[in-house]
Image (cartoon, rainbow, N blue to C red):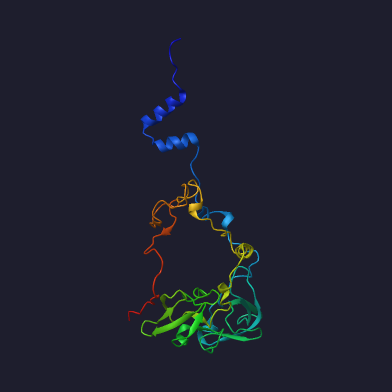
Length: 290
């Protein structure tokens, strides 16, 4: 009897250390605490964060481009102006005659300020320059206010689609066949001159001027969009849930800027920031190089 039997757990730890496994692995192996995925990772592949589309009215796009729009124009009539849940701007239901079959085509276009039911809408190269009409940018003079602008010919609308948004046609370059736009963000963008755009300002402007005032309104606002509210700050979480969590006082405890190539569990905060801090002084608009 006088012999001390070795503890089996100590034997296992000694063997794993001899193999060369790090101490952190041993801690996680015995405690079972491997942490959580941060919320931004869970938003990748998860049914929890999918868009709520049950009540949506449909895709809001320009007409598919065809011979009538390329050579002349086609006329449609606004049948109704409706609310699309989850969208700040109203939507116009426009009916066109089908050019190839005996039927009518109903398209959902973004409603511009001044639209009304029963109004005729003209789409095409030779359409008149009036609010709601759809024209290629080559037919639009410089300084015109447009919205729902295509990025590429036939993509049926990409830029300036939010309520109250508009883009301005800055200049045309006839040699290159391009047009310079000033977008709602203030940035400039060059697109092909034969992309289409609606004339006018998107309706529903000033929506954000009225405060929500209470949490119930914010709840219903985002309930028809997707699961993105309420937003919990990283510093308010536990260390197991977020890199900024934990501590006796709510503080980040590390630089808030993070590189673009960091792994997804650490890629939180100001990602790939060129500058940080408060914007001071007058906002300078970018000048054209040419």
